[in-house]
Image 1 (cartoon, rainbow, N blue to C red):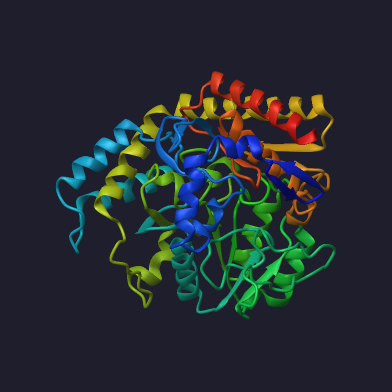
Image 2: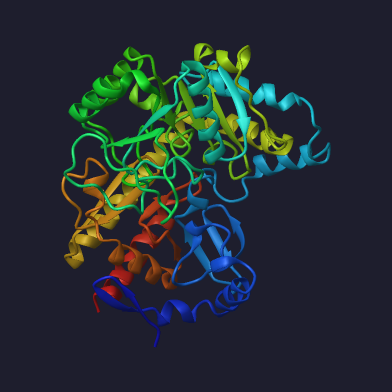
Length: 447
C-alpha cells in the first residue's frame, strides 16, 4: 500500500501507481541524471506519468494507458495534440531549413496576422517563451518611459525569470495588508529587486493609493487581464478601465500578460473580450499550437523606442521558421473557424464545470469551480467570493492535488494544482468520461 500525505488526509495511491510501472521506472532513471527527474517543476507529481504520444484530446503513456488530457501542455495545445494542418505546415518548413540567421518570409506574415486580430497590436516582435516575452515587454516599457519601476499584482505569474518571479502562485498571500505588499521571491533565498512593486489586484483604492505615491516613478503596470494562473476570474466591472486610465495619466505603460489568454479565449485575446486595450501585450502558449514561439505586440508609440530608439531586441532563436509556420497555420485555422470554435469551447468548459459541481454536491465536498471559456480552476473551501489572490490562497491545495492524482487511475490526466485546459478536440463524451472519473476519484479520496 502506497500512502501519501496531502495536508489533512493520508491518501492511498496504490491503484494509481499500479497503472504506471513503466512510468515509475522511467522516473527512477530520470532522477539519476535530472534534478527531481523533471526539466520543468510544473510537471512534477506524486504519481509519475511518462508519455509516449498524443492525439487530439488524448495522451498515451509508456505503459499503454490512454488518458483524456486536461493539461494540454498547460495551455499550448488549444487544437489538441498533433493538429494535422499545423504539423504539415511545420514539416514543409523543416524541409526548407531550420533557421537562416536572417529575415524569413513567415515572420512578416505572422506579424500581419497578429496585428489583424489583436486590438492593441500595431508592431510585433517574436521570441521563444512567455518568460522571454515578458522580459522584452518590460525592457520596452523602460525604454519608452525612461523609468525603471514596474508595478505587478500579487499572485499574477509573469514567468520564472528574475526579477518578476516574485509573489507568484506558491508564495503565501499577504492577507489584510494595505498598500505595497512585501516583495517575496518564489525561490527561497533569492534576492528581490527594488524596481518591482507589488500590490493586491482588483482593488481600486489600493491601486490609486500606490499610484498617487509612486506613479511618476513607474514605467509599466503589468497584469494578467484574466488571472488564469491562480484563479480563472474576472476583475470587478470598471476595474481594468480604471487601471488603464490611471496608468496612462501617470505616463506609464500598461502591459497585458496574455501568455495564457491570448488566442485561447478569442482571436483578440482577453483585451478584445474585455474591451480594454493595453500598450504592450505578451503572447505564447496557444499562439503556435505547441511549438516554441512567443510574441510581444504593442502600439506604434510604445514600440517607437525599438523602431528608432535605443532598445534592442535580440535572440538567435527568435522567430524560428518552423515555429512561425506552425503559428500561421494555427491562427489561420482559428480565424477560419472562430464563429463555431470559440462558442463550442465555451460550451465544453461549461459542461465540465457543471459536471464537476454536480460531483461536489453529490459527495458534499466544499469545491468551487471557476470557468472562463476553455479554462477551469477548482478550489477547496476558498474564501468566497474569490476575487483576488488572497481569496484564492484560502483554498486547500492538498485535497485538490490528491483527487487529481487519484483520477489518473480512471484515465484522466489533470494538473495537481487544479487548473484544467480544454481543446477543440474534447468531445461531449470525453467530458462525460472525465466527470464520471472524478466521481470515482472523489469517492476514493473520501474513503
